[in-house]
Structures are given as C-alpha cells and as structure tokens.
Image 1 (cartoon, helix red, strand yellow):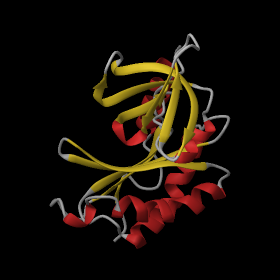
Image 2 (tube, rainbow, N blue to C red):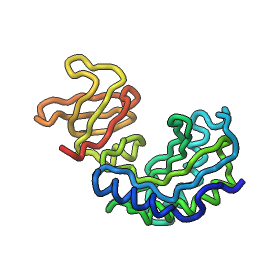
Image 3 (cartoon, rainbow, N blue to C red):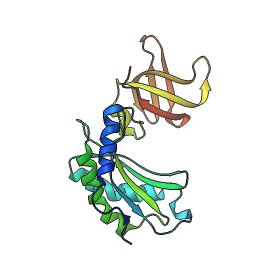
Image 4 (tube, helix red, strand yellow):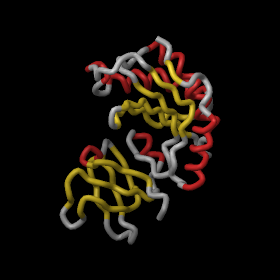
Length: 202
C-alpha cells in the first residue's frame, strides 16, 4: 500500500525548522522527505526484533550507494505513541538536506512494495550527526584514532559507567580505548556498552 502523508516533497516549514536546528546545534540531525504510512494502529509482532531492520537495510543499501552515499544505520523505534523508521546516511564531507530528500524519495516507493511494517509509522532519512554512535564493525575500523565517549551497561571498577578516551583498536567485538594521557588502556566488549559515540567536542 502506498504511504500516505505530505506527498513527495518535504513541507517548507520542515526544511526551515531543520535548517534552524542545524545552525544552532552542530550535532543536529538533518531530517527531510517526511513520509507517513497509515495502515493500522496495532503493534504487530512482525515489526519486533531485527527482521524489519534487516529487510530495510537490504533494500536501502544499493539505493543509498547509488547516490554516492553510505548507509550508516537503520532503526525502527517507538517514541510515545509514534513509530519511526529512521534511515541514517553519510558521506565523508557530510550530507545535506538535498541528500536526505533524494534518498527519501528514492526509497519511499520500494518500501511501499516491500511493506515490511504492519503498523502506522513515519519514515525519516537522517544524518548520523557528529556525535554519531558507533555500531557496526566498519564504524569502529573507520574511526580508529578518534576521540570517543563510552557508556557501559554496568560500572567498571575504578572508572564508572561513563568515560572518554581514544579508540586505539578494534577486533572481533573488542574495543581498546586509551585515556587521553596515553598511559592507560582498557579493552571492553562492545556488547557490554550501552553506547559508544564519537566525541567531537573535545
């Protein structure tokens, strides 16, 4: 079923608001090409877990790469009463609103045909931002040597739950972090971290 919503062009007020956020907050996420499906309201089991994300990733990756961009992440989240399918795109020099709009228009039709989600949701195409979360193996390999911030699921003795450092190495899900003095290192398992993000404000 074709997505219903504001049509194939982002509303002018949305573009203005997005530009405002980008000017005020360096880490603001660009969002445009805002589409909504109205296919139902019940939270179906089909949309739980990684099945939806996996299908959307497979669909979106070649489309995104066709624009000379990379697919950073795909997330399906519930925020209050609303559900969002977020597709994060990136390129070395950073993306702009036109990139988001082009990708959003290109994937909207194929998503209608794939129909991976049974309830009403909104599609957002976004930048991962400068404080992006590192998730996939290639993310960690790309940013070895970068400043990062870490939040653990459980505190580490003598360190706590949150700390910062330099991403020194990554291998087989193990993340090695060096403190900014260069004198101490710690290796953690990626699965033991609530999140690991770039720390571009240091």
